[in-house]
Image 1: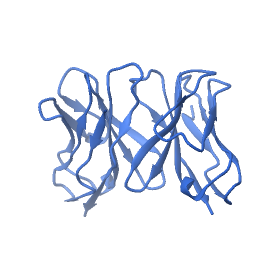
Image 2: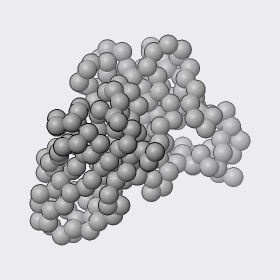
Image 3: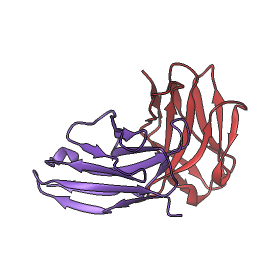
Length: 114
Length: 112
């Protein structure tokens, strides 16, 4: 069965410092991996995805994520955090089968202090 | 281009009442999904649809029904609401099953 783990409920970082939000996955076949962000009282917004190709994926708002097949990880990163990046971040995975659905992690709250 | 819209934004129900949540998308997407979001549990798929006139069960379908009579609309029904259905409900759509899902703003439901 496919699954996603976000091991940190909350990540605290100072503005201007690099940030990492961790995600590991378990799926049969080749994974499709996604990161979404949710601001308070809003829906989820798509940040980036990995389908195939380059292991480093660049997305919206300066975020990027690195796919590591051997470690089954897809960590979200940003070189310099902004206070406005504070939000809830979700990792999601879908297997390569035609009927596999998207499975979401439990979310990581990113708090960027000024 | 409004994307994915949901109505209502907020609703309070008494136990046993029924209601329908409406999701509409103007992107001509084939796939539509209903999720519920609960604290510490992420998003869980309730039902989904792979095209007009088709629906399928997701991870937590009990107590909910859905219909997709028109391609652009996906309705989620609660026939007899229970306090356990207090949640935030999100609708999403995608063109292909492996492609990006686009989410609506959510419906906050409180069942007393």
